Length: 208
Image 1: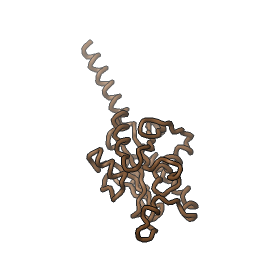
Image 2: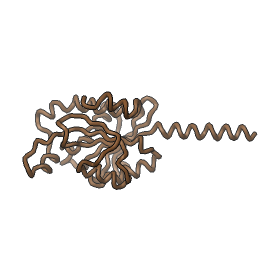
Image 3: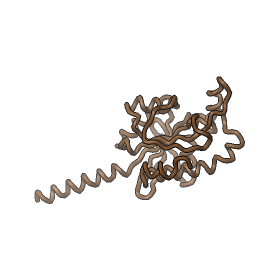
C-alpha cells in the first residue's frame, strides 16, 4: 500500500511539473485607448491581435488586462495585453505569472525598439530596459532582467525633440504596406518560442 501511495504521489508530482512547463505568458506591451491602437508604441498589442485573428482567438477582459488563451501543439499560451498603461506593465506581468504559476523562463515580452530599423527582429534572453518604460517597470517589479524579450524595430526617423510624437504616432504608408508580412513572422516567433525554445527561436528568426 505504501509503495502504491508513493508511486501515486510521484506520478502526480511529475504531471504537475510537466504541466508547469507547458504554460507560457506572452505579453504584448502597449497603451489602452482608441488613440493608441495604430501607433508604433503599440506593436506588442498589434502582434497579439494579429495572432489571435489568425487563430480565431478572443480576448476577454481580465484583471489588469485583456487575456486570450491559445492552445498550440500541447502548449498553453496566455496572451496578455496589460491595461495598466505602459509604465506600469510589470504589475500585470507579475499578477498573471503568480496566478498561473508560470516560470520566469516561460515569460516572453514583445515591445517596440527605436534602435532597430523598421521590422527588424531582435530576440534576447535578457538585457537592459533600453530606456523603454514598459521594460523598465517589468524589471523593477520582477527584480530581474533575466526574462526573454522580442524587440520589434520601429526605427528612429524623427527630428530632434520629436521622439514622443514619433513613438506615439501612426505608421507611415510604406510601413503599413510592409507590416502584415512582419506580423506573420512575429506570430511564428511566438509559436516557436513555446515549442522550439528560446535558443532555436533566436537562431531561426534574429535578423530575419
